[in-house]
Length: 363
Ligand code: IPM
Ligand code: MN
Image (cartoon, rainbow, N blue to C red; front, side, top):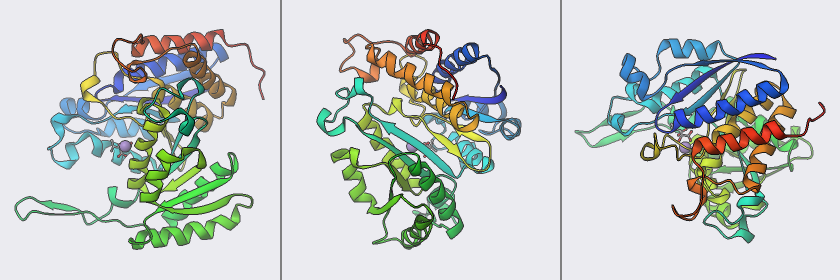
């Protein structure tokens, strides 16, 4: 299989975790005889420094001509007060919109080897396996009008959703649930927000078309608590853009580290794959980041964009094996003094596990 993958390392720890993920992709290509045409491109702070804009036209064109896009992270404190168009985050939002990736899948499972690695009690989190389906190209992030007037001390954002936007992301959530444990929890704030009332109604209309999948509704505040108290009760969590942003970080604490979480953004064709963690500027350049979120994002790319199920399963099993064998990055150990691996060493462990994996029959 020959696929063109545009790679956007971006800011902070983005380049390190992307390097790690690409070493895993190369191992998959060697093992299964694929040719992946990997093309790096600039986004975020690095792009601003070179061309004055966080999403150069050449980057956007490259992404629109790709089979899939792999992104590290965007965000640099130096641009926190820059005009919106120069902010690294703006590049990512523009890219998501341009690719039309309206559904963001964020699977969060607790690996057996890591049941006690996180801050929460093992007996609460063991066995957790949920998947957020976050609406990604609407809501507060994009709503107009928006403005800030520092002199008047007033700012505006707009939360707007249309029936069509809710319907298409709900359909993704139900199809994902059908391949899992057949439960969709739709999360909103329908006791206060009109957008949530529409959300609830439209999701309720989509549900009957997916026989066998159960739908429940939950308020976002209650959901935030339930994710820490009883994460195993969730299968697919469907929610709007900003609620999904917040709740998926919370799931990082449940699985043991935000650095473990991958994501896949899908819509009309070209998929965008990125770890859930951000640029983590204070960790950048030290080879201490956890590459597993980026590596698992590559697994999602193999499965969802290329239909390479065996290859995707091999990557995920290799991650599990490395963790079972005790491989840990800095974020997964209690203190600096405990033995742990660098970002690149963790990637090598996973590559070895792929190379050593028993040949699997296709199917
Ligand atoms: C995420 C990130 C982004 C978001 C930022 C970097 C714009 O936090 O993917 O969760 O809020 O969507
Ligand atoms: Mn986020």
